[in-house]
Length: 232
Image 1 (cartoon, helix red, strand yellow):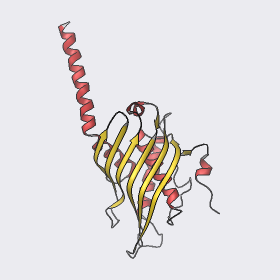
Image 2 (tube, helix red, strand yellow; image 1 turned 90 degrees about the vertical axis):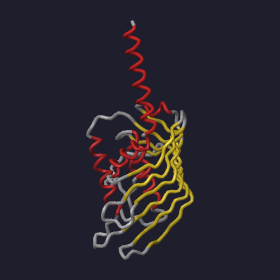
Image 3 (spheres, one colour; image 1 turned 180 degrees about the vertical axis):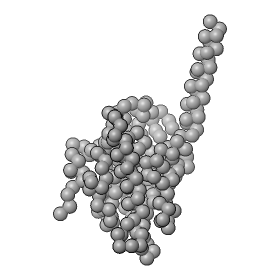
Image 4 (spheres, rainbow, N blue to C red; image 1 turned 45 degrees about the vertical axis):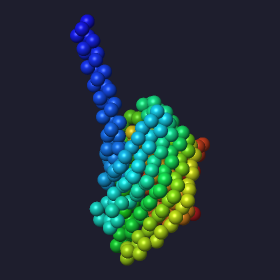
């Protein structure tokens, strides 16, 4: 009986230690997952987890090696509102995600092909999506509301000229996807929805059709063709 109690105490101690370490290193863990998703070094400076919120500060997505700017994307604060238990479910339901102080850098590289830093990042997102789709995955992630505040888009032409565009707020409702792990699903959903909509403000050189970004994002009752409309 004594040995049983000792074993039980050891198991509980190990479990508590694992939870504590996971909490302490959550920023590092998320940075590692997002690095794998985007294909460039991604870091999260700090993170906090409560029973109803997950908060991240100073997320930075590094540019590909041939870019002059150090970062392709930076976000000052990310706040996810959802019960902590939802992240353990097969079908994750997030009430709201808020992104504050987001800066996106669109850098054109010299050459006739007019390639940008985002070509390489999106190609990597597609490759990871193809890999994940080859594995059986019946789970889904749904975001009831996504709000992006204080957006700055820096466009850098091949000669180095910088053009800055500011957008106060973008809001989207009922976004969902069904491929990849939870963190990757959320990251891809936000990235694709944001890139599709900033085209109303900045001419984005990448043809964002379903052939370019093969991620099955659902927007309310709309089907895939509604999300990736054919260009006239």
